[in-house]
Length: 256
Image (cartoon, rainbow, N blue to C red):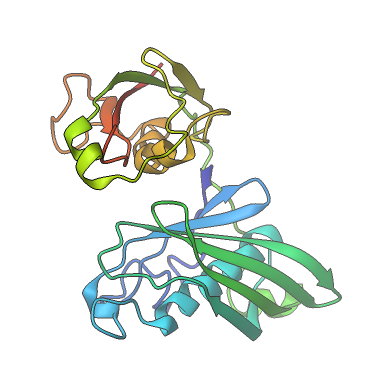
């Protein structure tokens, strides 16, 4: 994925609730281009709740609307505004959720209307919200009047990241006490390796394990190591376990 350069950053009066980095009560979203998708991540907090410890639906709708808007900005290279937004709330999002991922793409364009679909997933990869937006597209002259010229991405080298399954710990006492018998568990084996290209999930990688390590892999791919100020002897690495509480695997992640 490549980070999108915010074309409004130095525009006079720019203070968007969704994407301005200087708005003190804003969401401070940043955006990345991933193939046909525009992607953003966000960390919920209690100041944006509706019911107790539950994210407000209006904020979740704003996340969808904002990312859809940046689909217009980057993919269609113009400005626009929302004329219709439909959101389906599939799963409640707690304010303690570690991270939400919002992905949006164009489904069709009819003259000056862009139809955009979006999804919000939680840190486990579960679908929480779906959205369908219709955006009115500004013509080139009107977009220039608003200060829009172009929207580009940062050109940077992406590191390859090797993921190695180091060790599995099995808590048989917890399994016998709490877990219902299951026929199939994890297919990962100690010593197994995968290579992540451009921060993407490697083919054959366990989805549950990937969601536990994804943020670290993407950061290492962008060259952003040294997690927690000196945690690892190799600053361009991390040790992450999957989210299986009965038989977790530890994975060593490193730039190669």
